[in-house]
Length: 372
Ligand SMILES: Cc1cc2nc3c(=O)[nH]c(=O)nc-3n(C[C@H](O)[C@H](O)[C@H](O)COP(=O)(O)OP(=O)(O)OC[C@H]3O[C@@H](n4cnc5c(N)ncnc54)[C@H](O)[C@@H]3O)c2cc1C
Image (cartoon, rainbow, N blue to C red; front, side, top):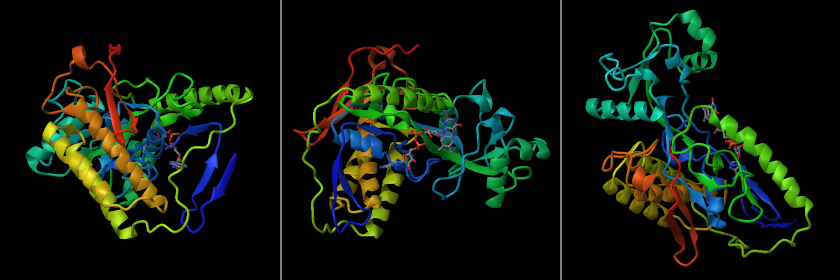
C-alpha cells in the first residue's frame, strides 16, 4: 500500500493503493427527500464501483417503507411494521381504513402494495400524508412492546396511545447494487462488495423485511473468507491507475449550492422516480438530474460534495434502469406498464461505465431469471 495526502483540502483526501478493496457503504436512500436511511446512505459504494468499471444491476429497485413519520426530519423516524402486525390501522383524513378494500390482507399486505395505495389516497385527498391509528390498542402494551417508537414519537410531541400519527412512504432499502458472485466478488478483480451496496441475488425485485441481516451475516463472512484466500496467494504488484484527483487548490462549490442541489435532487427524484414512474416523468427527471450535475463544478472538494456527486451518479443509474424496465414488478411500478411481464422482463438490467460515451452502458440480461 502506498498513499499520499493531497494538501489543502477540507476532508483530507488521501490516494491509497491496495490489492483488494471491500465496498460496504450501505444503501442510497438519501437520493430521495423522505427517507429512513441515515445521512451517510448516499450510494458512495455504488458510485465508486461504477467509476471503477464494475457491473451494477437492478438499480431501478428501491424499496419504500409505508410507515415513516411524516416529518421534514432527515432521516425520519421509522414506525415499525410490527405495529400493524399487532393491529394498528392505516386510515385516511376521514378515519376510514383504506387498505381493507384494496387487498384481502388489508394493512398486512406487502410494502409495495400498501405504499401504492397510500399514494393513491394522498393524491385523491390532495394530502401529503395518511395516518397510523393505534388508539384502539392497549396503551401499556404499546409502551412495553414498542418502546423505541413510543419514546421517539413522545420526544416529537406525539402520543401513540391517544393520537393519529401522520405517516408517509419513505425510501428504505436499495435492492439494486454492485453485482457480486456468492463470495462477494464483483466483476473487477480484487474489488468486493457486501451488504446493501451489493446485489448478490438474494432479493429479486422485492425484499422481505429483515433480509439485510442475512445479507450482512452470510456475505460479510464469505467475503472475508475469500479475501483471505485471495491475499494468501502471491499477487501482481498493485497496478497504478490514473487518478482524477488534482494536486493544488480546487475551487469546489460553495456549501449553499451543494445543499440546494441536494435538496432539489431529492425533490425531483421523489416526484418522478419514486413510488410510481412513467415514461414522461422519467425523461423529465433524467434531464433535471443532468442539469443539476452540470450546475456543479467538479472535482468535489469535501465530503458533502463527494456525497452529492455520488448521489447524482446513483440517481442517474436509477432513472436509466427504471426507464428501460417497461413493466411493473416488485418495488418498480410503471403507470404506463402496470402489468408484470415475465416473458420479456424476468431479467436483470445491468449497467456499467462506458469510457467511450462517458456514460452508462445499459444491458438487459438475455438469460431469464427464475422468478417463481
Ligand atoms: C430505520 C431502519 C430500520 C431497519 N430495520 C431493519 C430490520 O429490522 N431488519 C433488517 O434486516 N434490516 C433493517 N434495515 C436495513 C438494514 O439496517 C440495512 O440494510 C443494513 O444496515 C445495511 O448494512 P450495511 O453494512 O450494508 O450498511 P450500513 O449498516 O449502512 O453501514 C455502512 C457504513 O459505511 C459507512 N460509509 C458510507 N459511505 C462511506 C464512505 N464513502 N467511506 C467510508 N465509509 C462509508 C457508513 O458510515 C456506515 O458506517 C433497516 C434500515 C433502517 C434505515
